[in-house]
Length: 410
Image (tube, rainbow, N blue to C red; front, side):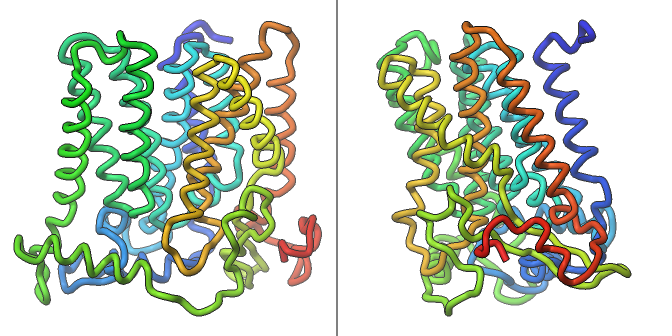
């Protein structure tokens, strides 16, 4: 390995650039709107005109970022999706940073980041103009910033913590599914501070919690600024807070049955993935299936159990990674949504590679290359499934059967 890649920052940037290249390859295929792009791209176009409210069940930031891509690269597939690739690359590099800050081992951080990149959910969400990719990027970067703050000194502790809080507010400004992470951040701060009083030196507990609430709230509310300039039905200071209740009513409305709906308790087993696209486009049969890498998704569950067991036995670092997945997943048992879909599992699926890396970190003392073998297995599966993840040309309408391990995947 080149010497410069033995340092964390160059290694993280190298993996991030590889991920960005992977996510961008043939990004514009298909040259038409895919799945929920039919909602968010038109909403982004409306934002560019500042015409009127659109897609009001979600906050503005994710649609602002899609609009920014359109403004920079044109109203076509590249413009719709380019910033989603950047968000996914941020997820990869942010995952590296989290593992480095927790375990301070380059190998562990690299293994985890590579598995994030090879997880199908990250790849597919990197190549579609949806809100979940932006939400995930801000959450991952927020966690990295808060861990970075714990290792700081002087003013760095404060501004890094505020940065993390603002990033969480921006995550909520993409989609309200990020709200629980504010509670997770507060609980984690209190728990770590009790066990390690030297963490976040010079930042009092009550001050940290107040900054978390204020900075995230201000960051969230500022993202509504464009809505104050709508030609029709603009927001005002008087209507900004009541509008949040309108958004909530939209979120909890009862929706009709959908062919791809699924219950939260089936997501970890990948019982019902989602075909984002399957039709003839650009001169060939093509498909995009939102599915997880079986090695990562199922192996990750074993790793989570190992991390939770290690935490029970006193390994707080591994235990925290396990709890991150557990909380991120179980919160969907109480979130008031009338329908569930597999893509809601996107953010929890990002923590599974981190749990795998943490579990292998515990076993490094025993030697061997099981972690590298696991990455190789994930890479082989990625190559095998690539045609139905990337909208590559397929042999014909029935070609999908080659990749269907279970009847519920159809």
